[in-house]
Image (cartoon, rainbow, N blue to C red):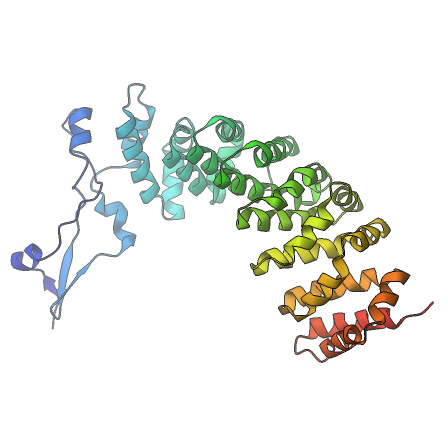
Length: 379
């Protein structure tokens, strides 16, 4: 049976939909704002009695006659009204679904124009969309002062704008062309916001950017400055904040300087406490951070005081990823004579490690064998 357009009766049976669309061209801006409600066109078809609408890929067509150039005129107008501007930004966000659409937006100078409207959360969503594509990301970094503008918004904007600015900075910071000077400025902002900002969603945004920054080889040393602030967030009531804090410390502890900073900031007792958290990621990142710290002699001594070893032995019954980190941490700790003898004195501890040698996970089995060899070692 051939498809045919739906009849008028069929159309009347459809639920009424109100969506944002294009304003008439021949009306003044105030009238346009009032008319900016129900101009989205939805084409319907009847197939074997079922009415189907066009897929989302047709959204740019469904918005009517608005073009990137017309949105650029709205954003460039000095007398633009906030409502009309936000509606134009919302439409731009929906239209930039594909790389080819973003290239058209770049040619219409919309990257620069959106960058001048960062007091709107929707503009920040557009910048984040631009930052995901190489062509527009290069345009942002080379032809605008977008990083400086985002740093200002992340410091002084509303809650939604501050959180949106950190999302944009997270996208942009992954670009290899960003200068070290800009990266240092972003890292400094992240440390300040993680410490001072009272809003949880802003703390999460700053921690996410901070964690990504210190994983970069050229910023690893500067990441040590974040350790005291991140350590203090291990006591935060929000579980996601604690998870990102544990993950950030895991990366900060890669260098000996980072390990030493964690020891001096009192991170070991707090990380030990996180091993009891009910979220797997919190336990895993905390165990990984402790594994790094246990390499240093000073770290072993602090773990004795914090009673970390008994907790690590309990974690040998946890999930495989946590078992692996716990085994590696214990292997490091067993080079300390007192820890080794006290652990070996309890037969159940030895049997627990021996049992993991038969683990189905080859990585866990290898870690268990190394741990048992170190536990049985006598100089």
